[in-house]
Length: 72
Image: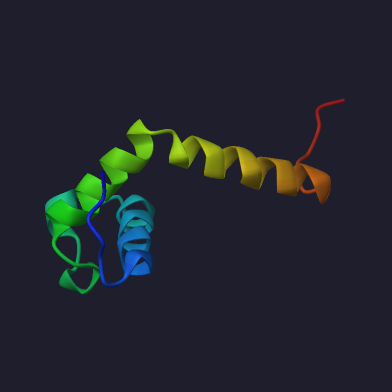
């Protein structure tokens, strides 16, 4: 599904940067690589459930550490 990329971390950083800044994919700085590649990775990771798994693991870790507030 994915072609090997020289720096997968930069791709993920690009995805995070895009959401944090609220910019269009086409406005992604070049340092993250071609925007089409970053978008494609995001689409594939969302499609196969990877982002959902990451979210669930982060929530579980935060809950385990008492960092999630509970309504009383």
